[in-house]
Image 1: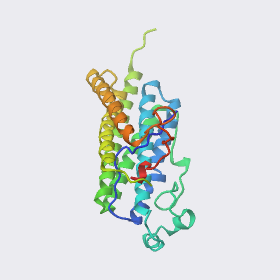
Image 2: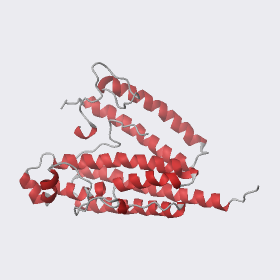
Image 3: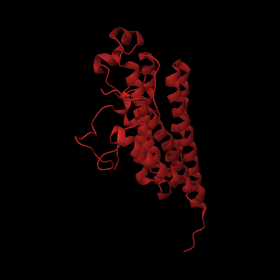
Length: 189
Length: 86
């Protein structure tokens, strides 16, 4: 089971109300390479992966939910004081007319999250290679969002998340090597 | 929503810092399960985390529930602030 902890993994601060940045950030909330996709992908792959890497998928999958909460906090803080005029100027009026300031799992272009974004192949190498690619795509997305943002407080949190993608990618690469070693071992019966 | 004192942020940040060490060591140990030095570090910081959790909770209420934190009277788990509100 999971236990909720009443704290963020890393402090989230924003300098000013800025709904346009929230529009970009939602890519990491409900987008194909976002945190929801990551969490659900890894936690779902656990059941058919060799025992040696179940722990890693469980722990990284769990950390992704902490990242999802950080993104939600960023979006909340960037939009909570926005007026309808500011919402309109930021180009998120399509979201507003449906959800007000509520969060919703869609990407920056408004496409709703779908399970088709993620895969479980039941083949450990295929699954882990997808996971490595997912981390690299998420890392790139964080970089593109940072490039769009001039909010130094927000960027501090985004840089933390970008670094986590690198760590996760490296751990998944190690998992691939662990499985290759297992496969190459001579078994004596 | 309750205003939180500066000490909330200080204690929270200390906890976040130790938890960062623990997350890093956890993922590292998931792929390096025979690194004794890392396991010693892990256990050291797990103990430190317990201490910081207790210090934070005595002032600002439970961090965990389902029985993983104690409650004072009245029930204060659902008190604000929630993490995105600070």
